[in-house]
Image (cartoon, rainbow, N blue to C red; front, side):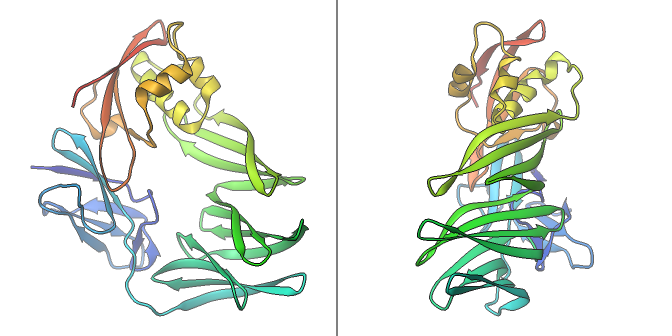
Length: 308
């Protein structure tokens, strides 16, 4: 019998229009549900045969060994628009209307009589603030808001139409002159927090530097080193990753071996196997790619792809 695992925090999972707080697998095969306080649970049926065409809105990742990792972001049906709040911002001779609303999904809409720009949100935003700053031939609109435990920082350039420059839901942000510092709690084995500096250059925000703080800085057993390496590379901490490598390996070489990925197959999902870890790109239907790691004296000495 197939076994399913799921992650209600990936994407914008909702239950009857409210953000999901818990996920669970039903007693019946190929079905799982999401639950939010004060809301009726929402159930989604999974195809009886996992294929490259999963049910609408459901991402399926084949972990191997008859186990699947699922996530989904169901969109509520219906075309009616419910408005939560509105505010206005004047930039030059143009007045911008900013509306927090729900129309199938939660949207933060910025518009003039002739142009419109929408940001998809995980939930209704509060504390929405808009500030306009003149740049070159147009204006840069800075939008900030709170989304439950997250915050939104967005910049939109406006001349004759809207051009998104920066859009990020994060844990916190701050301003240092014209620069924006974005803080994200990335988690992982050692509870990583990343702060990225974004500088406005030639009409765009460019990431100029990143710093990393780890809440768990103690030494880890050799069995966890592969996960630490994969996570540091995923988070962009190349300097931290380099410290885990033996002399015969480098960060560029490791990235070439591992290939592109945006998710790590947590060892909690599978039977614990030392020195083996998996990575995958979480979109639509995908499969985990597994690697075996050589470890000696607290350093990774080799990485070898395993055949699925």
